[in-house]
Length: 135
Image (cartoon, rainbow, N blue to C red; front, side, top):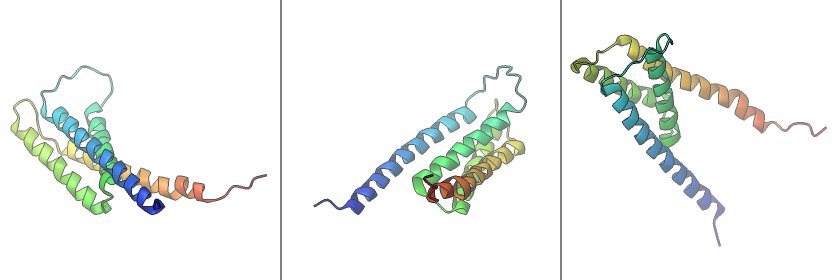
């Protein structure tokens, strides 16, 4: 006899494993991008670097949340530590520079993830729980 609850638990564990791998690969990619020598091309988009930082930390927050389901403050502390680490390493590289504005953009990426997550839980997920009238 197959236990339906055990099957669901196995699916959750497998799904979380996929997100852990995705998080690891994303960390490698982000680390490569922030530590490698920049090849900036004129893009015409002001503050593209800050948008990249914000987007990267939004994705890191999203994947960390899906992989580990940590409390919000644990996730924020860990990713803030990574953001500080990035800026410290960049301050030591001759072809990079540390920037407080980059750190702020990183923190805004985390905040944006939690705002989107809250909106999803508050409006979209809640809307699915309400039965619509079949008329």
